[in-house]
Image (cartoon, rainbow, N blue to C red):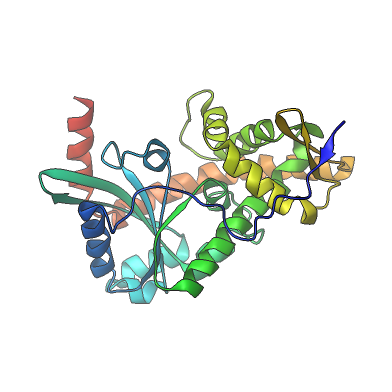
Length: 289
């Protein structure tokens, strides 16, 4: 008999383990360089993506998000501040060498206000909430209240993705399959092509995380959504009206067109704003040769 889940308290963002700037001098040096580059305006630094999943921050590019107080404070350049405000975020390349080892990163800058909005349903495009519904490590936060704000944004990103995908997913299934399909929908809006099975790999590599955040949000999602244990699987049920399903399918059709258009626009913007391009190209050539 299915047993309803009522006893998995998740009052805070689930623990995500990963590198620590206090114990990795090269990472600490890189974060200090980035803080100096942006004039002390970075209130939180987030790590997500492949290096977090693998645990090896020296293999590939670190995906870092720098959350700043505001764009004017983060830049001395009016062009960069305006570009970041008009079409967030801005993306840069940064590296740090210490002890003969080089730490390389793709650095993305966004204001706390835009990050909060980008994780919420106020942001139609899935660019932010699709990314940060995935496990994310807070490498640095200015203080405890800032950390709590960022954790709330990350939890909100999960909620936004679930609300925007559940109406077009099967009305019953296991939670891991739910996330495989939800992440695939988000990736379908991007210009880049992910290899087949990518969403499945992501969902399965952090199954405990997705089970925790889904359980956390289940009571407040509506849509007749419930989660329950059935044998070794955590499963879900939902009840979504046909009109809601149709509207959500149309929304994803629009997102796919919008997302690809904005991806091209961001690439054009990067021609004028991307810093460290020559270093990045040199590293890519070295890595692929």
